[in-house]
Length: 63
Image 1 (cartoon, rainbow, N blue to C red):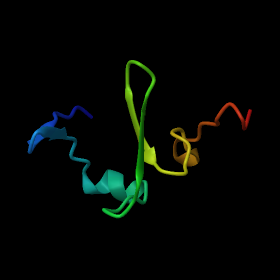
Image 2 (image 1 turned 90 degrees about the horizontal axis):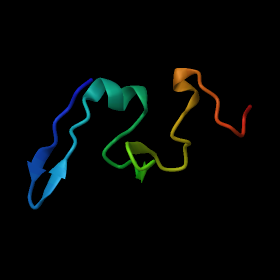
Image 3 (image 1 turned 120 degrees about the vertical axis):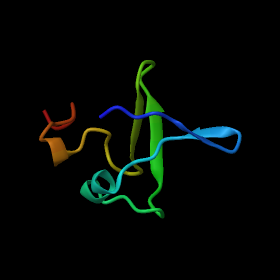
């Protein structure tokens, strides 16, 4: 999925479609953790690992 940032005041916003929000159980009240690996932006619900079991992958701690 390719997205473009949308101007929002003096910032830019990334609009996430409802099906993705529903899949990840994210609402307007969900706190999000934003990190980077130096190349990519990683947005995940706070308190959950960036790579959840939704896609079937395991974190290094689970291997």
